[in-house]
Image (cartoon, rainbow, N blue to C red; front, side):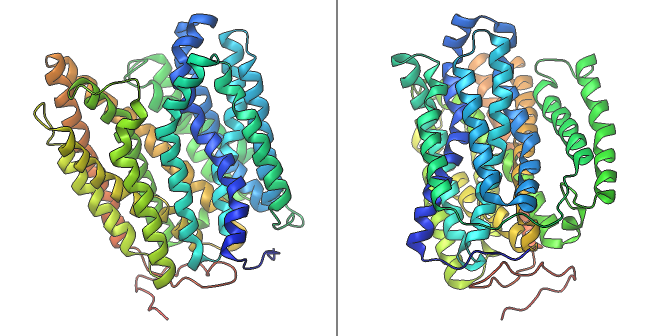
Length: 483
């Protein structure tokens, strides 16, 4: 497939990407906003026993559909694929807002999550097609800013909308913003057309959906909603144990596999996939449990919970933008995941020392270390993955990294939740929270150290300044010299 895009002026690219980023923001904001509205939803619709499914259904559908959307973009063109994901997300949002009972809401959240799966993967792939590798990191930093904005602003927007307009507007709010994003992308995006003779890997898509669903349910249920030895958990373990090898086998037989296994033969792609999993665990673990420590131990207010993460989120935005500009000037990128892994490890070590006497300022400094590490490495995972593959697989590569980060986050939260609960049950309330946080970040230190080690073995392949992405990195163990 030959790209029809050409290098464009930075101002033009930023103008085009505004619509793409708006659509991506909607998908990231949604769970944050809805989480704040959940008590009000339960009071009106009932169904307290199915409360967790309102969030889990969305997360599960997003994770399962992400790599499928990414591959469809490679096969049939990214513009129409992205527009379709926006449309599905908006239909799901409108129906969720109109839901009359909890079962309807859960079902419509699945539809909404399917659309959201195409938003993140599509945005990364569109950046990869529009922008040469040498310039790409500057724009990847925009996605880090979107993530930080969603994390901080989601609870604030959700609380305001629920209190003043009603919980249904937590979903209806997506409609005008999504329509703007749809029209914007329709008018400004000019990307590649369908690949001739492309075929959809339906068996692979079905097996992948089942397997990812089982893995997400395992991370969600295990040790929290159900005991590890319960029939429910054992069932999803069995499904994942059968589904994963079946999916891998199907990918060796499919003419157009959803996830080409040949990607993992590339050294850089395999290593950066490890980094994605570990960074996902560290990031979601921190955002899930640090506000609990701040509220319970340090006495912070829960009303503006998104603001509690500002010490971590601001460095993500600043550092990701700075790293992108430096990389664009120098063409070198290996230093950033190494620096990110080192800061993540150091930040986790520092956070593991917190106690009841730790001041908010000190905790904020430790969080800033973690945020700076995430800023160095978070978007570099996608960029390095894209630089390791051919243009025809750039969507699949982006989707795999997004999926791995999501799965890493799901299992990280599950692991950290189990550690936290064990500590809380063994101590008094305040001491239990402190011990639980220490235990979480002790384990997080190990995960971040794995990411650092993987980053050290990356091969720095030169990034081109124009044209399509660079050829895949060599599989040889000897680093490729810079041009």
